Length: 162
Image (cartoon, rainbow, N blue to C red; front, side, top):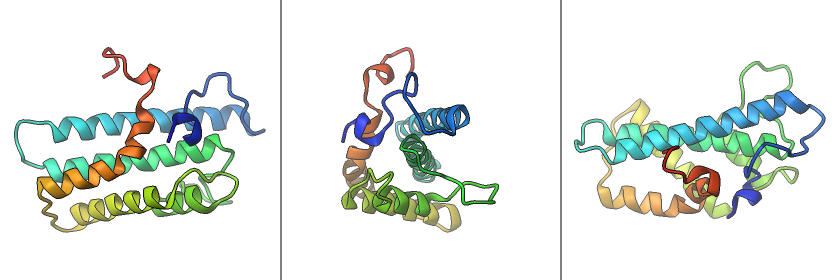
């Protein structure tokens, strides 16, 4: 899936819905936060020691995908807050909206299942104990690669940004 299909190529010069500047800034901030969390997830995965690796990778990766989903929803003209609510929608609601809302739909069933699996593992790491072997972790990450691939683009591959 390309960045254009996710609606995240660039926020500069795009015509966004009437809510305008606030929506653009919030989507751009969500996109940047998503990238930051993904980089932290990769850094923790590649550390020399195992202490806290699984938990940190799952937590940062889950946060990264949640923020990416919110940026995609905003970019496509969707809303990430319910009317009258101060807080934004959660991970599961983001996945459901990105999977089934005709206005903003950009996820396939397989991508949604992969994201839900990562979120479930993050919940286990956050609220209890989780033990994942490298084989299972790698398998989950490989299935998530279509989602991770959305970060590959000319502006995100410069060595100075990584």
